[in-house]
Length: 562
Image (cartoon, rainbow, N blue to C red; front, top):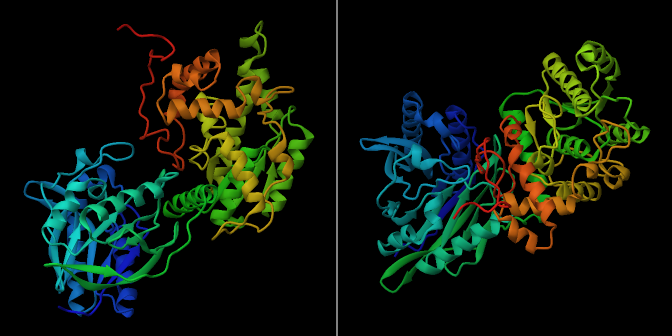
């Protein structure tokens, strides 16, 4: 038996979807680094050559050919005597297109492992795009029998069982597993199940980075045959580590025994959410080539938190803010907006909207004569602010960030073509209750890798004062909505848990309030269809995770015919 350790490098990469040349360079750089450290094999994440998810881009025949040609070029480089590679790429076979892990060594692709279990829920749409493999067998790499299973294949027992029965010495999982709150515990639990069922160690190599709404947190890890964590890569950071695996005889079989290595610390819940929003915004801005971002800073908590995240993600010099006061803007809001800008060190411009309001009053006065002021006049203010933000974006090239949170987005407490104007949202999947918690947390903690200040990022009054849109005199959010702790619990039951109204009422909520919130949730669907993309942090964010019809007469508060 060969007693030398088999050295496996886990390369946690941040690819750009569609940038095949750039992704090849990232893989090449990781391999060179691993080679210098004496690695035998480098594992990269699922579809690392093209980025994940590729969506319908991967259905283009030219894209498929480009990926396969670049993969073969990359494989030729392994003739240099350096480490073997496992690279994720689409691959076109005679019977269809497959999500494939390509094993490269000695100057060629020596194995093509195809994904068996194709996810078709939430953000995933693989059954429409890829064909599914019928079986998976171990691959031989430099004398070691490796069980490669791609992402979803780890979440069910049959692939791991088949690989173990066929003599695999270790399970290797190249994956692109999106961040969600509590997802890390679930991944670890499923990985430990596969280890317990097979008696084999397991390496989980996850993608890093933001791709539109979806955030990949990395946090790759290695388990030994007892399910103990032997190594863990950093969350929300590009990272790589080599694990020495010693051969071990178990009866008539061989297995690899990973040696203990570096274990990066895990983030608590609030810091993980913060890191996800920062990474999502940083990659959205960077990968799409925006010079910076523009935020309407109102003196309220949502815009203050958005600005703080933006500065942590991009640095103060790439964040510009603008205050757009009206006759209803309080002195406290003016002070708090300036206070936020001062603490963050960002530029704050001021553009009063009253001249525009007066112009619209004059323009629409004859048509509105005889009708009392109502929400129409409130929405004109919001839409004037949207026009100002978009004009500044056009002039200076900055991306406008919308500032609405999930509570508001859920019930339509927003104005189309007004405060909904913008290209990206960092709070779209964050309930108002969590907005308060994050703001308090950031005022007392400095996140890892943050470009923002070490001290507070907003005046304390921004967190403690009652939320208001300030579109009419003495307006408060709770004039139109239930208290946010009540609203958010009802919404979490309706959106994340899909609970009927009767079960929500049984939790202690007022039946009329539940019925009203459910109605508001459904009738706001048309607004959400037109909303900017935003960072996904929950199991069911609005968009691809939750696809509801706009025209929808169903309510759980009404008993349908049986």
